[in-house]
Length: 154
Image (spheres, helix red, strand yellow):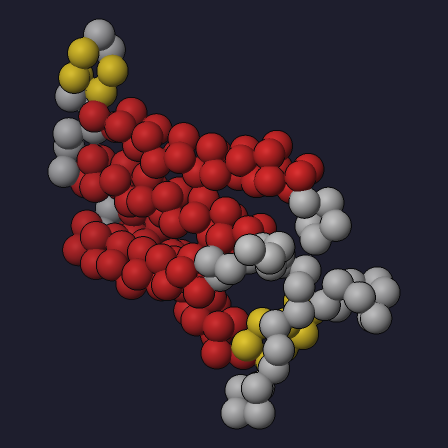
């Protein structure tokens, strides 16, 4: 098996897709290219995410719960599309589970079970810690294990 690609590896542009290129200081190395279609999807994802959180803040249940669906679907799609790049997939996985935790927490408040005790002062709201922890573990794996072992490509 060859070396796994990283976020700094160049994605080969195709003729039929426009690309937005993010360049580092040295233009001859470490180029990461993002197809414009992906960037537009990421930007739309942020719009859905903001609507979800504004609805939560304002107490608009129907909008908040509805916005979970497109926010999570796009986040999962972004994570899947970046699966070949360890830096990207671990960060996008962390974002996806963060949105999941945040959405669960919002639902628990909307439907008033956030303060119901499960056991010894531990309420249903605290179940959001499970996906939050998965996100932290994903980033911990990348920064503490994978990246130090792959310095030549990270």
